[in-house]
Amino acid sequence: LNLFQVIYMARDPRDVVVSYCHFARLVNIFDFVGSTSDFVEHFVNDTLVHGPFWTHLKEAWNKRSHPNIHFCFFEDMKANPKEEILRIQRFLNVDLTESQINGVRVTGDYKNKLSEEDIQKINEWTKENTEDMEDEFKYKMK
Image (cartoon, rainbow, N blue to C red; front, side, top):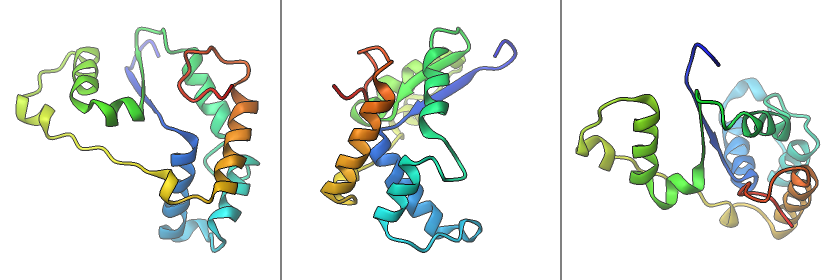
């Protein structure tokens, strides 16, 4: 971390599982052919190639005060992309044109992709894995 700058973009685990499932179906190296619920099961049991989710995220969260890490949330980028791009611009100490800043577009929507059962499963998993995290952590379930 002392040699490089890192931008860590955290994302709601429910949106992550939807995106990851879609990606796993598109890329042949994963050979995933199950249902979205099957994928959720793998995701919350940490049996996927790119994981475990919470170990990775917590490591970055615990280093968020390091001067070479910019920790941000996908939902903040989505809610106010210009503000978050300006933060990243300051962090990287780069110059962007107004056109470049205004050109950022962000999307995401797990509620239309996951069943209520899968959402609940991920919510319970999230609650278990965020108990030891500060209340300021955006995805902490109480």
